[in-house]
Amino acid sequence: MFPDGENFVLDRENLREAIPFGAGIHACPGAPLARLMLVITLEELLAATADFSVAGEILMARCAEWGTRSVPLAFVPQDATPSA
Ligand code: HEM
Image (cartoon, rainbow, N blue to C red; front, side, top):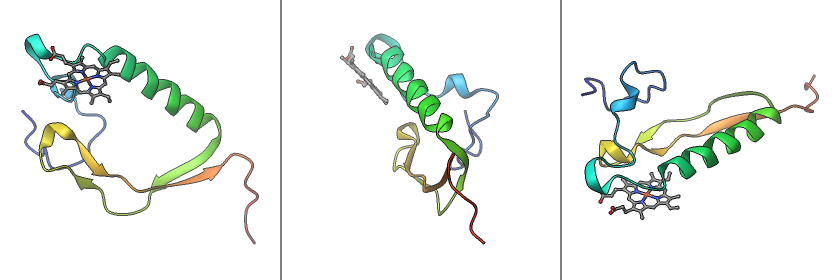
């Protein structure tokens, strides 16, 4: 499904075929709520953030469908004054 499945890629063309919420009859019924919570969380975070970058090694979970285990990020707050 994902030839480079060990890599963290947010804009895969076939991202919708990923199965973080399971599939079939036991697919997660909480997925819409979980997605909404994630969207709101990211909206609030980005509204308060001027910039961010990956700040360390991205570690994948043991099983690919569990996604990442660790994504270290560094955030610059909106009101941060630049250091000299
Ligand atoms: C990021 C958040 C979430 C992830 C990654 C997730 C992931 C999953 C996955 C992979 C399954 C399928 C397990 C299997 O194959 O047997 C599942 C099932 C389930 N999830 Fe979630 N889930 C999340 C949030 C939620 C929320 C917010 C709720 C409820 C409000 C919820 C309720 C359930 C229930 C009741 C099942 C069992 C469905 C069944 O066996 O028919 N989940 N979830």
